[in-house]
Length: 272
Ligand SMILES: [Zn+2]
Image (cartoon, rainbow, N blue to C red; front, top):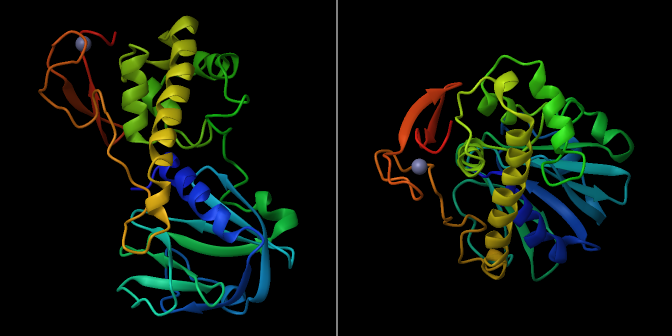
């Protein structure tokens, strides 16, 4: 599933090719994604992309007609640039026609993604965006903020950092990895985690996400080539997906439990 680093990589990959470009028209081959693509998207004609940004895992493409496209890649979505005469692949549901040499195609076999359009002025008031917590790489996500929230809560610390109302974009992989780096047991009750450990956790979240994004950055050249899959990159993972393998620090077997319905990997010796 595309996580925040993949979405950020996608943003960085598409921005140089889309910013200030005109979308001549949009062809929709399958409108039923997670939600129906609004007619307004298929009616776009000769609009210019004047800005792109990411909020959580949503890509926001601001247009010069005061509208903003909201794109989510869901479980299996991707965007890639193609030449107009490249054969359309199965599951290429939407084509944004840019110019004679290039078009942007939205590909999504499982169709859990979405393409919506909203007035730019109120886009952050959209129900998908208006209750999101701070970005994990922004100054708004800091130790005092998380310490204050953790103090009152009785749920597992891992569930707290995966809650999109608390902080966005910390998916299961990155939650496991950050808790390993911060040496915190994923099941530990929030209110029992020390302020010092929460501070370490905030730093660890920053570090794992930044590292993943910079690794993604190395694949950006591939991103725009039509014969390559975009953006996902093999990462160095310390605990995630390593059940029964030795901890990289102490050689204890990595344990896997289910927490909040998600597989949770940790070292029972290093993470207290
Ligand atoms: Zn260990």
